[in-house]
Amino acid sequence: MQRTFFQMVWVLAFLGVIVSLLTAEPSAATAAIGTQSSSLTLSADDPGRLKNVRSKITAVLDSTGVASITVAVARDGKIVWEEGFGWANREERVEATPHTMYHLASVSKSFTATGLMVLVERRLIDLDRPANEYIGEAKLTAFAGSADEATVKRILFHTAGLPMYWNIFEVGGQYRPPDMGESIKRYGILVTAPGERYCYSNFGYGILDHIITNVSGTDYADFMKKEVFGPLGMTRTSVLVDSSMVEHVARMYDGKHQPLGPCDFDHRGASAVLSSAHDLVRYGMFHLKERIPEQTPILREETIDRLHRETDPQLPELKETIGFECLLGSFGALDIGGYRIDVCTGSMPGASSRLALVPSENLVTVVLCNEMSIDLWEIEKAILGAMLPGFSEACESEIGHRREESGISTVPPEYFVGSWTGDITTYTGAQPVKLRFSSTGEIDMTINGRAAPLLTIKTPLGEMGFRGDLFKGLFMSSIDTPDAARSPHVVLVEVLYRDGRLTGYAAAVAMNKRYCLPYWMELRHSEE
Image (tube, rainbow, N blue to C red; front, side, top):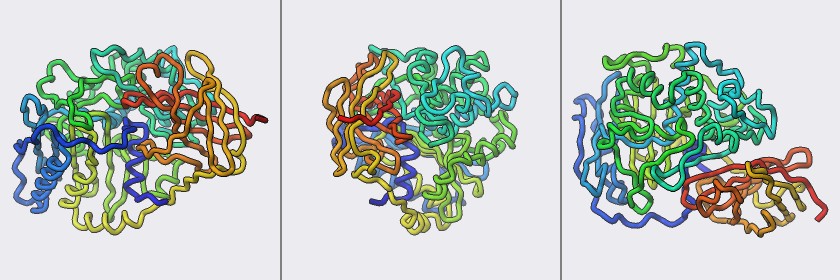
């Protein structure tokens, strides 16, 4: 089985971000899509094809029923196009505009990395020091490797050993986010040795926002407003929904186009920033080191270069196999048609976002939506194709040839075959597990004595099966903790074979997409 280059990039970009376990297609729109828009007139020297992107966006709105899409494009230090399509609030007939604020989901990580580097420049944080030195009383716990090797830099690169995680709470709902110190005690676990593997970690960026708060002595949201948003002239950008900006915030919608309420996280640095297309494209201009009048530089140019050029040297396989580099600033770098593109993406229930920089062309593109059910890459690709000669042709020819054999097998390696027993270690205590692999591919598991059937449905959680020393599987079961009891859930298991043991994590993944809560799992061969 093969996967195209950009499909693999999609998995990397969204691994650990909020995903849907539902396989049904979204229902038809329940209300007509608004066709009005608010826009900046395109510059006379822009390619005519850019105007054709409008018709593509309208077609996407009509065919999918999503509420709105907003775009912005800047080149050579000037915004050349920004426009809103559809409804920021369908029920109240509020039009989407370039100044409408959207939830950015994981694009938030870039802001957190930027804010962190403000403190690095002030020599208050050393990226090569253990994160535990900056997070207060609660500490990361190493079930694999050493916590001292979980440096701030490795958290930025998603290589600190933290597992997949997300945790979303409805504002005003029954449950509230725990204090970050308590979350670290429960979920700040290293399940692989730091530096050994890449695993996209929302929790890691929650730790980074906690570090910003501890080191600066200022709440993360206030720090970002004072040190990042304000100096960069981002007047429609905030962490969570600022009470003074409520009227400008796009309402979020689920896959059936029903309204969703505002949400909160215990990993705000990973997911909690809102911004407008107008603000976000200007933020991209700052990262291209463009000087615009309304902005006060918050980082030295060499620091910005570091955010976009420094990669993790321990993970060359990402670039070698799919042409994707993980950057210090939470962007990913791609090469297509001779253009280097730094991309940052986000997705969660009710929101999706894309920010792309093309440094050689001084180009920034932004695409925002108040639903998560569509692939904004198709719109971003159309914009880049309009602005970059040869890009569209390169997408058709190059990406089609950049394929990676998945390496996934449904039949276990010989050393997996047999019965395994052990425990899932949760913050409330150990829960017994039994796992059996047959040589023909049958897999049986029990948790707390309850049968846990293997699920074979296709989900965005990634391909299931065996890849070398790794097993990944999804089971119809549950993990008995108060946190996981918030919602019906399934159990994701990801373990590595190491010296006669299977070690890794079992995660409760909510059917309503509100959480993925991982716990250490260790099994040994048994005679059963």
